[in-house]
Image (cartoon, rainbow, N blue to C red; front, side):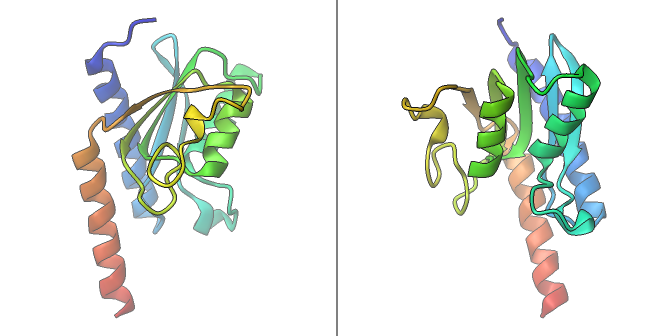
Length: 157
């Protein structure tokens, strides 16, 4: 399947809208969408704080939504778009779901598992591999995250 770069940007814009929804709820602004055959089948945003659930990252929430809509835990042929480089937990969930492709915006130098800290998608010993595209709308996603943490620091003094 050939994906147009414009498609990546369009889907990432929707993920950024979801990230803003997370921010409105006091969560770290990360949003995700899952696309199958050009159609969004899953949406999610960070809600670990509001749900008291450490696994409620945007990617996991989007996979839960897609799994429910598709009535299958295997998300075959799907692309996951997320505004921040996924952590090891989220990459592991993507492997189990058999996500075909991952597109992310900003890198995460503290917990990123796609090359920033570790690079799980390129680990040849694992039984599933995800095609990764990085940096789509990275400036927008990074600005949103930086703004959030600046505000958070001002509030906590």
